[in-house]
Length: 418
Image (tube, rainbow, N blue to C red; front, side):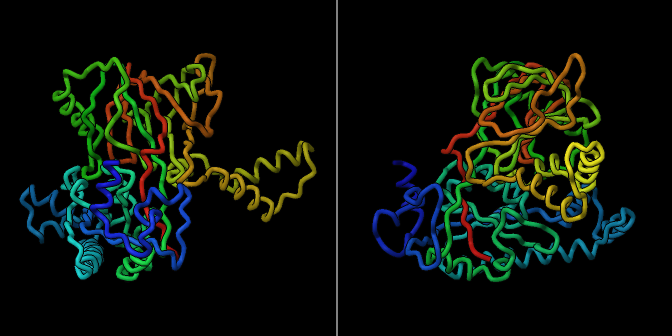
């Protein structure tokens, strides 16, 4: 009830005052809002989380080295980067952020703009809703700190020409954000609860202090040092006897593997409480329905060339009487690739073993598949468990993680029509 009361304090609900209009929980887990529906909402306080543009990143990095703006321009030119181009993209992003902020404030909404590096749990607690202003990476960061199922997170793509923005509102609302706001007020949207992954960590050699990769361009050596520096703060927690729930949820995926990509990752894995299996591979990816269109999809997708070669083998071996032409190749390829994608609202995960090594010692009985639970015990030397490509936990020999889902971890988002 505490969460419900907090939500009611934070939103001014519009339309019919009946019980179903009070908060998102009363809408079914398969939200059915449509045009003209009376359930709308208006936030009192909104935190706008903005990305760090490439121009800002380069400027900050070299400003510390004492470079002037002209020297930065020359250095970028030597690297084959356009100073003017980076500045132009930065200005486009900044103008679109200003448009979102001005639109909110003109509606009497209290707005707090924070850079990614300043975004923290205190900001999340203050806000009734979070708006990520950037691309999918900014949306993943904004979502990572929101553990309240009833606090909406909305993404706005501030540079649609350079960013796909799968997790953001349709591109048209980047330049017409007031229209999106009024649709929210009128209830012309539907809630979508994107299921997320939770992680229980235990074992030996544990370091609970994560390294934030969102704001850092780290070399392998720097990445290892960052983990070591964090480990000095966590010496008392070097061994965890019982499962410890990490205070972060994965919206896209969890990846486990050696930091040096050319080194094979050695671990033991149990899928859905099945027998433990020793594996060596290029790493393990476990994704949600949201993440099934991202890294997981690209790990497993079939290329038309591969489809054609397999069908020709079937035809030549007379295993089946096939006509192999462009239409057949396209249909088979698309059907297989489409099978890898599932709804963000489904409470299940998809695991992928990347390039498994198979010999008399190591095997991979299942290279990929749907699952509700995955347990991994590390036998690695310098490995990490990376959440949504932005938060890295040390995951070396003796560390154990249980990867699962719980409906209470779902992220509240909204869907607007194109």
